[in-house]
Amino acid sequence: MNALVVLAAILFLLMALIGGKKGIRSYLALFFNFAVIFILLFFLNDPNIDPIILTIMASIVISCINLFYINKVNNTTIPAFISTIISIVVLLLLIIFLTKNAMIQGFGEEEVEELSIFSLYIGIDFTKIAASVMIMSTIGAITDTAIAVSSPMREIHFHNPTITRKVLFTSGLSIGKDILGTSTNTLFFAFFGGYLALLIWFKDLSYSLGEIVNSKIFSAEMLTLLCAGIGVTMVIPITSWITALYLHKNQKKID
Amino acid sequence: MKNRQVIIYLLLLLAFVASLIFVTNNYSFYDRPIAEVTQAETTDSTEVIDLYDNKDRLFTQQITAELKNGDHKGQLIHLSNEFSRSKAYDQEFKIGQKLFVSIDEYNGKQTLLTGTIKDLKRDTYVLIAAWIFAIIVLIVGRKQGFFSLISLVVNAVILSYALDLYLDQPDRNLIGICSIAVILFTVISLLLANGFNEKTYAAIIATLLGTFLSLFISYLVIWLTSEEGLRYEELQFITRPYQMVFMAGLFLGSLGAVMDVAITMSSSIFGLYEQNHNIAVKALKKSGMEIGKDIMGTMTNILFFAYISGSIPMLILYLKNHSPLGYTLSMNLSLELARALAGGIGIVITIPIGLFITIYFINRKRAKL
Image (cartoon, rainbow over all chains, first blue to last red; front, side, top):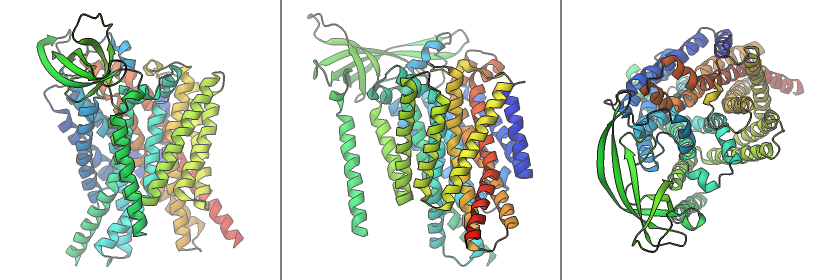
């Protein structure tokens, strides 16, 4: 039996058992997201379409899946969605600056030896692909933080409808502070777990600190991790502000 | 308070400027020669079409650069650079960029030194990104932000030390070393994030149980299926027994997410108890499960995207070289998917574990009253 199939089956059982209907929806969302990445991959193979535009479109679809499909359309997910998209666009500006200047695209010298059977001149703009990868690695964490801030804000507003917009914004920020540490931690371990082999390799071949920091692979990983961290942090004030604005506008409509 | 804040921000600004000046002038700390591009001219370009009909363009660049360190400091060096439009394994250099170069033997006749380009100096950009991250975390998180930065740094140091321990004596068990490291990571990160209280203790116990149980499940599955479907060839940088390195990475990779779930469960259930000390255990269980359902979807997604996205450039390269789709996917995604699935199992399993441990702590607290 294929190990991946067994792991996927165990995950499904656990999610269905513990999460019920919502658990099954969450599990299916993983598959839909995989399908989105798959479709994105095919479009990225066409050198005539700009990868950055494709990535923004994929981010919108993925946010819809993560927010609207798992949690339904309501006054938590709508502000979370808007905030996710704003954060991604802002983050993208930073990422484009970094990928253009730090030139971390494509493959490092450590990887390229085993790629010798491949033609590397394939006409795809790898600098933009690098920006796309950085956004895609972060999108899960950004939607997670956005919903984690906006959902308790709605509860606060629900229990206390006369709360002012400013107080609501501040309470959103303080919720954000509590989850900030664990979100960055999640990303930190995910990246270092994934690149454990690389770290051992650097140590085994006794790379100096200067060589590690300047190498394409390590700096690409570090920049991805840092941009992901910037993304999950930035989404906190943005979501607090947008959710406060949104809930207040809705309140006025009801009144 | 206001004064103190001003001082803190000034200190930060000072540290930022100082480190930036350092990193843009740290040439003498490098053994490898560094040169700054002063002139770059594209002299030649040709259209290329590869075996699979992919069109690309190759350019040749003539570069003059000024050496910044070593015996030839201040001298100009002539470099030639070839790059393609797609830049998968080459770069187009611009004026002002700093390069690591190697200098050819000087024969005494030429007017200019010549050499080859080794790599780009990237430390400045890593530093800038690190500062943006640190500053935005401090602005948004204030004191908690500061503690989370500390915990990231401490964790990085522990990880590096743990790897040194393993590499010193390769017959040591990497999983064993990682287990000890995992306990340290969990205790330090959660204490720094939430302080010394029952919420944190409950989260620590739940995290450790969750991670070790999910490691056990993944290990069992991989062992029972005799690793079918896992393509270890894709572990590129490997100098050690690969299964062990992979399992250790899988173990560490899910730890952050499991901690996140554990602390969310314990602090929200404790929150309910603090609002109403007489709340029934049954009600706590029900609310706890609801919270768990809310977080499991997005949490599994975080790991999924963090792992899968990194493979995109390699997938494109394979597909553009007309590799069969099934082969491409299994070669490049099998380990990432295994990591994401194992991490997902850890996340989901920690929900009931966190729930019951927290309720145990609440019951203990009640009994004391």
